[in-house]
Image (cartoon, rainbow, N blue to C red; front, top):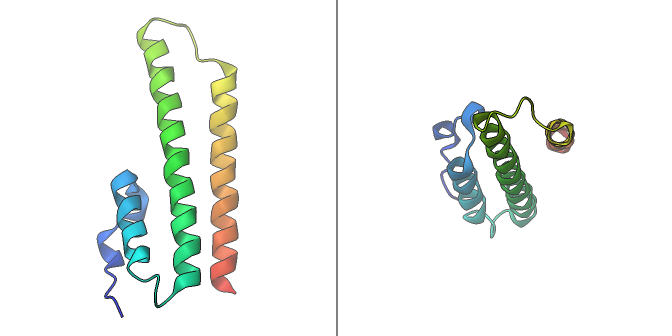
Length: 100
């Protein structure tokens, strides 16, 4: 069994590197725990991809501010709101599945 050092990952400061680290840790356990490893790998990949999209949108909004645009497009605000809601929903679903 692999020794998992989850204490070295700060859940409040998750970035692409930390997500990759978590994915790697689950990949190391895929033979002994294939189901939980696969679901977490898939979930973390989705999170990483969503973070890339969100980062891209945030950089775009900042570029608009830097160019002197008065305000960001309401469409970007809606996308961020939907993204945050989807993360909350995903988090609740994962917590429920872990409790079972």
